[in-house]
Length: 58
Image (cartoon, rainbow, N blue to C red; front, side, top):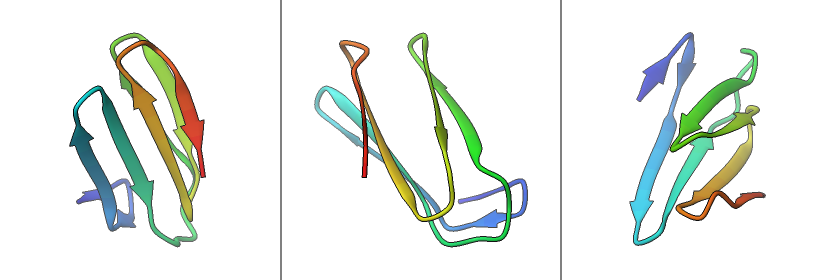
């Protein structure tokens, strides 16, 4: 997926969670909103949002 100059944004949906991956880039972090939870995902980061509103980062 391409978004605001980023190439290679990945979104994976699994039971109870959504994972967002932003590949290496010179662009600014992106903001993602899901079910009232907001996260910022910088290049080279992976963030996971859970249905219960939890967040994790790798």
